Structure formats: structure tokens, C-alpha cells
Image (spheres, rainbow, N blue to C red):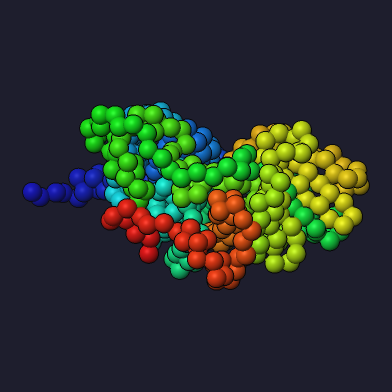
Length: 423
């Protein structure tokens, strides 16, 4: 079709005007107005979101640079509940539900994962995520035994992924202040560190009576058990807020539950993140251990100041300090405490999760990285073995074994159920 000069100029002017009109792009899409551009957000997936995981997820959802995209759980009711929560927050229907964690780890869109399953899964899922190129925030206890602890550290070193153990007290101001007093020599030469275990009993994982097993889509019992020893389906076990191996598997117990917090704080206070104790002995209802530098670790239930749950105490030649979950700090002298500081009671995970996200961006090491978690968990596992055998044990923190002690060394690991492997 022919076009004369006038029509051509008219068409060109109209097109030019259209091109000249400014395109409106919301400030939030550009990362302004206090928002983070979509391309700069950390895409998060979550695996095993029950009571504790739900709290952790809430902390992640508060961070403006996080986009939660995928929920993986063996229970349909949990998948639906988390999807509803995410969709309501973002005002869409985009949250993806997955039953098998392999499918989540295969998603290239996922940058990081929150793992809050039962402890039977923690190490295997964390290491699988690292090998799939994901950064990991994992609830504690992170491992079930000494060998798992070693493999956790090795695989995260090998893959270069970021790991944060859910020992969030490392990031709380009152614990940080107390640990710094010990680390920086303000208490004089450190002599002993004290941890509250919330129980020093040990146990092996038992079986509950068998109940009719629900359809796999409703609860995938095989995936719930994962690498743990098989046992029949039981409604009470499946509904447990903590899982059936909360204390850590073969010889678990309170020492690994609270201990993975309190012993972890003692390790850091003693500048011992790269080692574990060399001697363990049950004594007078307590567990006494010795670090390579001679500092004594005392794991005890009683004799604490009224400072809330999860207390720790650090004693040096010239002073001592004690703190707990109520946020208060008591020391041998007011001079150690200095001026007033803001008090944060309870044990919120927000600071710890923020540290993890910052390290995902910077690729720096987190406060509770895989190596630190490895050694603090080894100390707890070795203490549990000493309690289980009810005798004094020597431990080599370089070879990570009990020299010449066949009985104790057999408890360093346990067989995983087929076909699961940690390699």
C-alpha cells in the first residue's frame, strides 16, 4: 500500500510521541523505597517446617532481601499451611509445594535452604544441599554422631557453600558480651567454662506401637525416617514437635539438645572452635572434660544463678561471668560489666539469621559455620559416649577417635538405612 509524504510524517510523529512517553517503573522494583530489587533477593526454600521451623521461617520472612519460594515437607498439612502463609505474605499463589527434598535441591532458582526436619535428616540434607550448590541454615543438633560431624565440615569446606548452625545464642548480645570477656582476657587466664545440658541422661532410639500408616501423599513415612533405622508408623511419633531423635541418635540425650547451644558457647569463649576436649569423665552427676589448652569444661544441671534457660558461666583467675536466656549478665565485679547495655530476653533467631544472609551475600564465614558446629557437636557426642559407657575416656581431637578404646570407637558412628549415604 502506497503512503504519501503527509501520511508518512503523521505516522512518524505519532510513533515518536509514543516512544517519548516515559515508562513507569515502581521504585520497589528498582530497589528503592526501602525495598530490594527482585534480582537482588535471596531465593529461599525450606525443608521440614514444623514448630521450630515455622518460627525460623518467620524470621526469614521479616528480611526484605529474602523471597521465600518453595516448601518441602513429607506432611501434606504442613505443606499447605506454609504455602498459605507465604501466599498471604506476598499476595499471590506462587509458593511451590514439594514432598521429596531431591526435587527442591534440583531447582536452580533456589539460593539457600532452611532445614528444620528431625535430627535424623540434618547432616544428610545439609551436605546434599551443599553439593547441589545451596547455602544452608540448619537447626540443631546438626549431626547424630562424631563421624557425621566430621563429614559435615569436610563437605562444606569442599563445596565452598555457606553454613549456619541454628545455635542462635552465638549472635545474642548478652552471650556475646560474656564470651568476649573470656576470649579477651578480661577474666584473667581462663580456667573453666560451664554449660547447662538440660539433662545428662542418654538413650537409644526406641519404637512406639504400630498405627495404620496413612497414604504417602498425606505423610510419607519412608521419607520421614530417611536414613534412620526403620520402625513402624506411629501417630504420636509423626506428630512430635521434635522428632524421634531429638537428642541425636545412638546415644543422644539432653547433653546434645541444650548442649549444642551451651557447649557451643563454651567452645567459642575458650577460642576452641577448631578443636574439642581431650578427656571426658562422668563425676558426681556432672560431666567433666578438659580442652587441649587445659581449660576445664563442666556440663552440669544444678548450681546456676536465676538467669533463665540455657545458662553458661566462664571463670578466670581474676573474675567470672554468668548469663542466660533472660538477658541479664552477672559478673564478679561491676567493672567487668561497664555501663548499661540494651537487654534482649529470650533467644530470638533474627540476629543469627541476618548474619547468615549477610554471609550468603559476602561469602564470608558465619558465626556458627560448619567447622565450629563440627567441633562443638563432637564435644557433645564424646561427652554422651562417656556418659553412656559411664567411664572416663581419652579423645584425640586431631584423629577424632578414642585411642585404643574399641568400645568407645564403635559409638563414633552408626549405619544409615539403605539407600542413604553421606559422601
